[in-house]
Length: 127
Image (cartoon, rainbow, N blue to C red; front, top):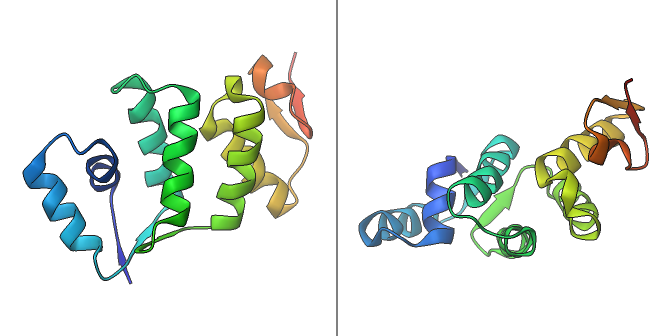
């Protein structure tokens, strides 16, 4: 299966460049795999560049999870991270995803200096 980069995901979501959007759609038409890193970068771009709210970012990730042509790496972990992000978005999607990856791998507690992340189950504030 083909794989796609962050900028392809952003074009599929933002649709702000007609030519690139058409190329992205054509590329994923027969299916494409989305690496976790591309998903994390996409969430960051949606926040930092496009000023999307946490709910809008969550909706975009949810749409990617249910997209007919896309397969997200570790989709079950992405779903769990998305659920936690929707419940408490202050920590950020990437933090929720890192915590879920660690939880799934059995590497807990998850140490952090991030106070918002440390309020999550299985995360520990280093102080």
